[in-house]
Length: 129
Image 1: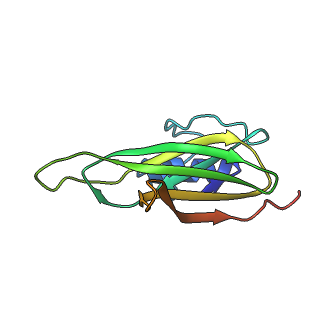
Image 2: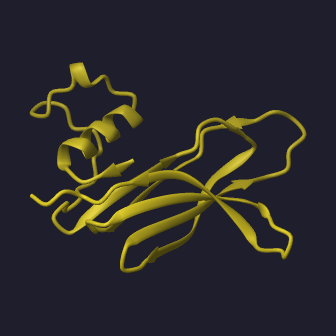
């Protein structure tokens, strides 16, 4: 997810905290929602679903060029003899860019030992206000 507004950020935090949006009253309920200056920053939230035996995700790189911002991550696994289902995720606060954003997950190493990257999400450029 690419989050660029306070409302989107609040909705994500409440859903992630399992708070029903219909029952939330901003005046009286104060869940822990970190403050983000969306004039200067944006949030990229990565949710990879259910996986077995994971410790979360690891950001491998964030690279910006003239056309886009590319975020690369890997899922960190551990060895275990029984099933241990987790739902790894990452919430990244990055400088706000209006260009396209691509999120890629690291796959297996290719023939020359370099990792392969699988595109998980692509966000179009932001529209001018």
